[in-house]
Image (cartoon, rainbow, N blue to C red):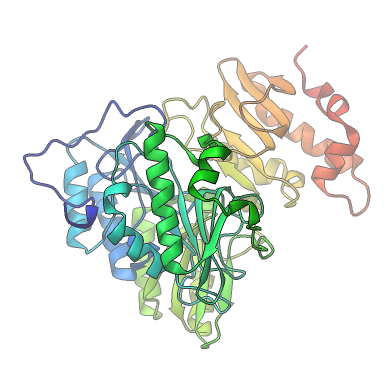
Amino acid sequence: MASGEQTARDSREEVPTSGMRRGACPTLLEPMQTGDGLLARLRPAGGILSIQQFIQLAEAAQRHGNGILEITARGSLQIRGLGPETVQPLAADLHAAGISVPAGPVIELSPLHGIAPDEIGNPTEIEAVLREKLAAELLSPMLAPKLSILIDGGGNCGLAAVTADIRVAAVSAGVWQIAINGDGRTALPLLTGSADQAVRAVGDLLRLLISLGRHKRCRDVERARLLSAFPAMELVKLARAPEFQDPLVGTLTLADGLAVLGLRPRFGQMRAGDLIAFLGSAKAFGATQVRPSPGHILLLAELTPRSAMLIAQMAPSYGLSADRHDPSAHIATCAGAGACTSGHYQTKAHAERFGSIAPELLDGSMVVHLSGCAKGCAHPQPALSIVGAQDGYHLILNGKASDAPDAQIASGDIDSAIEELARLIKNERHAGESAAACLRRVGKGDVTRPLRQG
């Protein structure tokens, strides 16, 4: 297939829709079975869609799926509720809309590439050369399905806070750094050089991973092998990363006077009908471009400041928020029961109630993670985790969904347990103290004592 695109194939070719290998990522032509049908994940080439293309994508999701779209934590799009017979027509519709979805590992670009006021280098140029010169390597079945390649143009609107197997980051004009297995502060630097040197280094890494065997990640490469491929790596220091920024929500005015509007879908999920109507109105206000971005954010670009203000005002009617202080932003939810076969409870419904029964927990000092099961797909980092289990719920005060619970709560008692936790914070918190700091000071024993089952 030209350029490795996952476009509509010959109608005689069977589309795989089941039996995905463990650990694989759902793709456009190899979706994953979930509780509400098949789920396809995609990232358009360059990370940008026109308003009209996004409308056509939402129409296709409504036509071929259940009309629910999601933006993942890393900025990919997910279409839910597909059937085995609708996967191929969906791919054909996206192809007809001019939406290119390259096969192979996802290559993530800075969300504001090309327009960020302090961008150092252009990630799209690196991506184009990678896809041209390393097409065979990128399509190798030996690569791990979750292998992540990130190209960061630098600046405060870059991807310094996002982890990746392979990081290509601009450090000064015409100079890029290759680092592996981490974010902008923790990755291991291998090489600093020109764009051509960076591309060659990515090729060397991909070939090294392929030589190690099926589905290896950069964390699996021994230091001796890295030194053999990058003999000067011990002399390379990791470039200083900018301060990690929260996801862009609200209006950012650019140097040219235009604006970008960041919107957060409620709990990362959008309904196609609402999205189509919203984008139609945004288009009437002059919006031309959509950029799905990390942090479950939808960016509208090429706006005037006034049109950004008007679109932000109407967004809540369509389940979108331009309020960076929206309490719901501090809740991470997976698909939950009904949408995921592993989910033990309806996480979205609980998330909707959370603000009214426990506002004290949503002051922004911590993430509340509502996970349908112990896999913790929505938030792999430590959080205040409420995890569905066969025996009810597991409460983990500061940990991952897979950690041992600090308290077990019976199925019918979850709301009262959350209210009890919020009441404890309200009664015990010192002046100026955050919810997270209060829980740490009080200690797990005293916090969970009234929550434990007798």
